[in-house]
Image 1 (cartoon, one colour):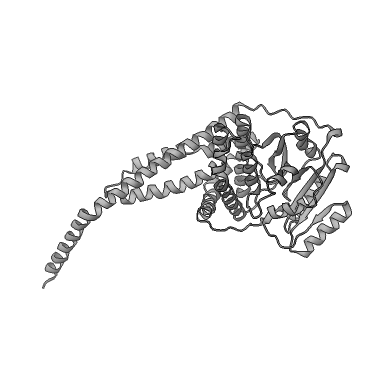
Image 2: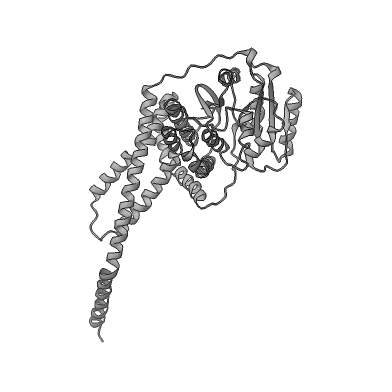
Length: 442
């Protein structure tokens, strides 16, 4: 048998295989293509709607800059306050405690507790020395069980104040901060919690800090003010916040082990008809992650905690008679930032599978690029909100750096956010990640 005959034989076999593919596999692939193509456009529509909502909130922030009037502080009616500073191997807690010692608040009504979960004796020793010098209370419980929420619950046992004011260790409040944060409780006995706006000590240090501070600024300059004014709904953020102790106790304390105990507790408050006030006139400075790795970990933890909290309380919120349909809708918007990241992942997956299962044909490069560009523009609400947040926080000069960070560090942030979300969906556990902080160098 010569070479030509062999080639002709195997060519015939190839034609028969291809005919079988066309007869059997192609209809199946067409069905897959129709499914993935439809899924892509449904997800794209949802992403466009969410993106449009962020643009709407951004426009509202630009054209409605009127801030709520702060209530006056009345020294004679000042409630007893316990400042809680939970910490784990963080000397930054001493910088925070020192700032709290300077509060212009009635000293007889102020208690400061450092909840020290540290497992490094040198750090605990320095905390003890500082506390002894300034008459502060230090609480310890051994292992860091339940993370920050477990620490807060342990501090509750020693907290004498009616109002609990919580700071992460890297925050540095101003002298008049406590008076201004507590004043709303004096005038409104039904108020359950107050959250101040965050600012940043190191926002322009590098790509990671620019991106990290911008992400949080979108929440504090765009989302929270919009929610507060449109639906009277707000959320706690975990630091620079004040809560009524009796409400914490009545609702079963903080959820031990929660990675975002602030959001989880906020949802319980809202579900039970309690009110949270967001003070956009009052700021407190803290640190954002200094390295890209720390930013990835922070955003992954936050995504995990937020989605886990909504998964746990979502049905209860929808059934709650204490919230209007409008309130419930706006509460749902809160988690849409992380939802957009997940939607982008699903869009990439369904778009790729739709392309791979389509009938073979030459690629129309111009059409492909134009459609991709249009889809990016239609889902760019978060980018628009980021630019507006930079402007409102008087940091617009960092817009180019933020854009470069978004398409470098930001891509990895999106990946880790989706890892956190997927872990929740598959009931996988996640640990608390400690981040490096400049304040620990004292």
